[in-house]
Length: 116
Length: 113
Image (cartoon, rainbow over all chains, first blue to last red; front, side, top):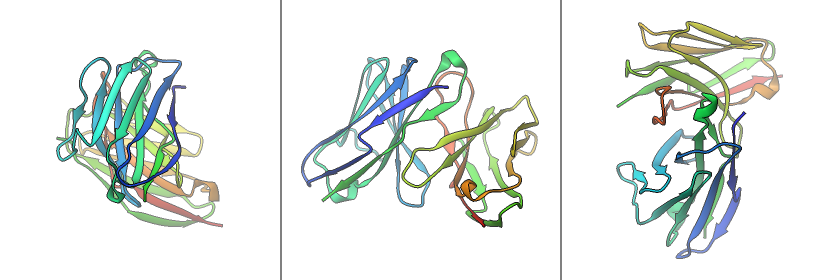
């Protein structure tokens, strides 16, 4: 089945720095990927829809200048958390869909971000 | 937009018993309903899905039922095992193209040995 690779799995950064998270679709192309944020013991909250070659679409309440999304190729989307603060600490997950296989959405393994 | 409600939020069963998780959705345009299993510190994994043209689907110990008229769908796990312990999410979306997926709040299933 479709595989989505997400890196890093864990990252600790200092307040004020930026962190980049990568999401790659393996063996399939994805013109659209999704980025989610998950707080402890809660469901997945959609942050933005990443579109290859164009601007991402952000959900209401998500700061686009805070969470920069780049989808420069058909297999790679990146989420950059800029000027990170402790409240940005969370579990970030990406997902993609292999339309060619008529499959459902596959999720990455997630990234645990801790801002100290 | 779509709204998915899921219950119970927590569920404890004895090993070998069955577990049932129920969800409802609001948007009649939704036609694809996946179920995900999430273990601690990992991303959700698709365990089974069902499309609106089917009423029931089974894969070994896991089955999903869909009542399109009532907008209900349920996950049934039989002969539960300790390794089934995880958080389960139901979701609803449309099967065409790239559509947003709306998730339920999740059910924490604990299988007691």
